[in-house]
Length: 321
Ligand code: 2P0
Figure 1: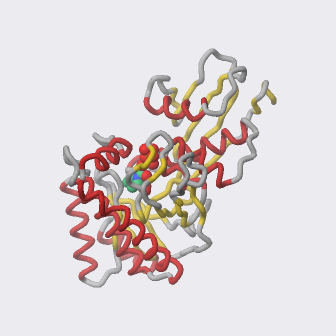
Figure 2: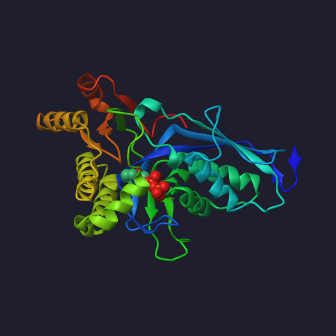
Figure 3: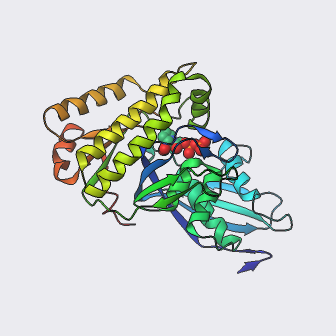
């Protein structure tokens, strides 16, 4: 069925992603332009499914997992802002239906997959016929890390140089790594006190340590590129863990301090280090929260599961999409 100017659309999916080299800090906060490039791996079938439907109503509607959201909520406001960038005034209101398949217990953020799925849905509704690179730019305007969720597999967000941001988008890498496992280790899934957006702003403004971050991120990206090309897991794990801890060091060096770790986070880190000392190739990465994402290969899955019984294990290059 067709409504004036807008097609009723199908449902669009985008995967969550986990960064091995982190995005932390913006050179332009309005356009979500990063200070450093980043690299992630998409999580296959875990992500967000979004549908846009024209409605005969005075206002847009936003639904999350089947529950209507207040128009003034932060969630609704951010989604509708992206929609308003594209809609002509005469076009009908829309219902945005968004479903997350991310396990709520996993402590994964949904903004990356959410804005990537919305960008895909907007592309169809407004018949924009955007390339994947432009879709990635559109998703980035909603949330920086969303530009990486336009693609599956290993994905690099090229920071770009232009002030309009048209060259700041993700590109997929041609490599796969079927043995690569990511274990989601939940420490605390409750909403964090300081979100990434304000956390990175605070770091940028107050942490002197942040000055060393862009160079480290660039070097880590190079090393990760080599690790992936050569399927060198020890190199991949070490650089990803070092990169995450370096990002956290800049957070801790902010003022007021930004420490996302909880006692259980630290306990889990120490357990990883102990197991590694005993010869198990096991590493972790962490985002702006207390949860760990363990990195290991499929041949060591049983040992990792034995040490962390509650782990949710993903194999991004094998899991069905
Ligand atoms: C990342 N994070 O690379 C890093 C690591 C958090 C820590 O991307 O303000 O939600 O919407 O651009 O994308 C989270 O930041 O921030 C993030 P906005 P976003 O995955």
